[in-house]
View 1: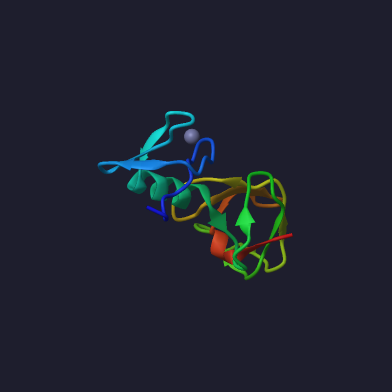
View 2 (view 1 turned 90 degrees about the vertical axis):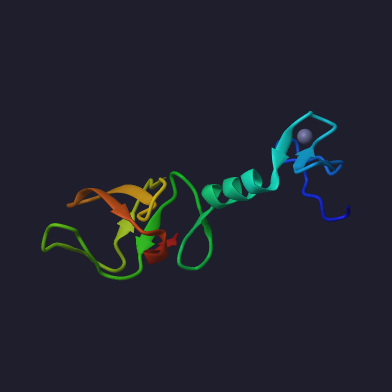
Length: 112
Ligand SMILES: [Zn+2]
């Protein structure tokens, strides 16, 4: 009983198990371990160094990236402001000067 997760809503440590549910006695939130893990995975997108990225962050590109459908290349070191995190294989939505709207992979960027 010692390894129960804290409540994801109010962070209470007095959670208990009820069947396959976890229940928080303080805010009455109920959740399953599966839903908690799914949420955790969705919520965290990390850069190449393992730093957590957030909407609005400024990043640099750490390797030359070919732009799909064109001969352009986003150069290593290109600075990108005000990123937006999205779901999917390319998990960063952004605008790059001279290129316009782009999607990048978080593994190829570094937070500044
Ligand atoms: Zn709670």
